[in-house]
Amino acid sequence: MGLKLKYWLVFISLVFNAIYAGHLIAIETIKPKSICALTIGMDHWPPYQVFESDGSVKGLQITLVRKIADQIGCMLLFKKMSYPKALEALKDGEIDMQLNASFTEERTNFAHFTAPYRAEFMLLYSTEKYAEKCQTMDLEQLIQDGFKLAVQHGVAYGPELTRIQNNFSMNKKLYYVENSVQHLQLLKEKNLDGVVDDPTVVAYRSSINSTGDALRSCPITISHDPLSFMLSKKTISREFVSRMNLAIEKIKQTEYYRSNWVW
Image (cartoon, rainbow, N blue to C red; front, side, top):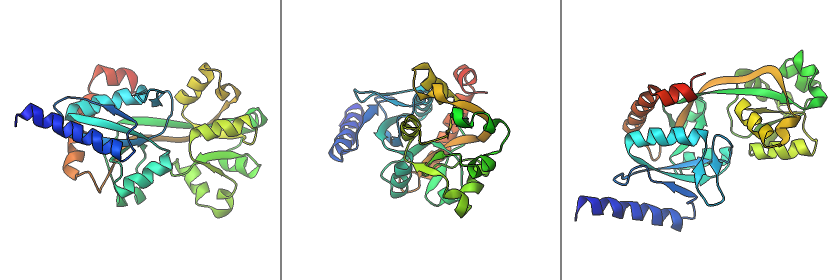
């Protein structure tokens, strides 16, 4: 059997298995000769990652991930799921990789972490009701005052919010949701006073006349962390993590990366 034919048979087998399992949302073939495939669990979070109606995937972060995958010759399969569901799928080996991962000791029980591939800023945003108070109060004071804050299940936030979450009485005051779309729905219903989100995402929502227009930024940085790829220990070897680290480092040296991801 010719080598080229062998590669295509492996590719067809991967596609068939994904369709049969009912998991396939979109496939990005980085290189036809590739026999490496990574299944990524992620949610719709424009403009970083966008699932189009035709099943294709695009976005600011997707471009970066594709460039890194290209360095190691991998095919990418995107599976649409919320962040907490992706965590569970990663634990079980149902997916190989998750994006936007902050390092925690707890997660090392089931996942490898690559070197950081980008930085993240998460700020506190308020509706008009708390726009003035949030300029002078800290996060704990706001919540004690009745500030209704939504946070996502499974997301690792900065130290102050984590401390609040670890306090039973304070944690009961938080509103837990599956994804950031629910944030928007709750804001529209006026059941929330604020959200934690990325400034780029909030600006994008404002630009398309969504609820970003109703938000006011507070001088409170919830997190400013390096983000890594999180890889399932059930499906990914340490040797592969090393290869990804080399690819990340190579992309970081490019003009594309310096222009788009260095803040």
